[in-house]
Length: 135
Image (cartoon, rainbow, N blue to C red; front, side):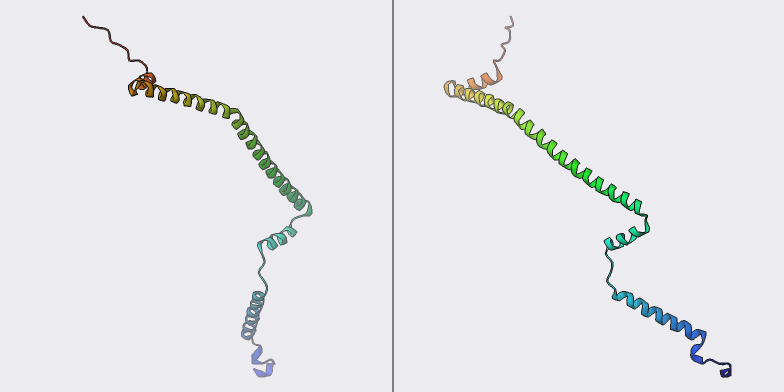
């Protein structure tokens, strides 16, 4: 068999073992490379799409961003206008109601001091109705 040429080192079994060992060394070389970030991978994927589609997508993202920012700015301004107008419109009503309650409470306290506790309560609850006499 040795006369047919070739050595025992170059048998098909030896070749598969040699290729798998070189495959393992190639995997080890990939470990030395730094990992890609997600943004790098996405940027690499953009190359598979045609240029007009990439431009359209970029314009759409830019327009959406501007729209969201504009909507946010509008909502902030609208809420500021609404709440400040509410305070300006309703503050006098609240102050006037509070003033009227304070005046009523002062009148009640004055009556209580002058006439006693029973008269002050009668003024708050109102006069008690008298029942008709039964004959």
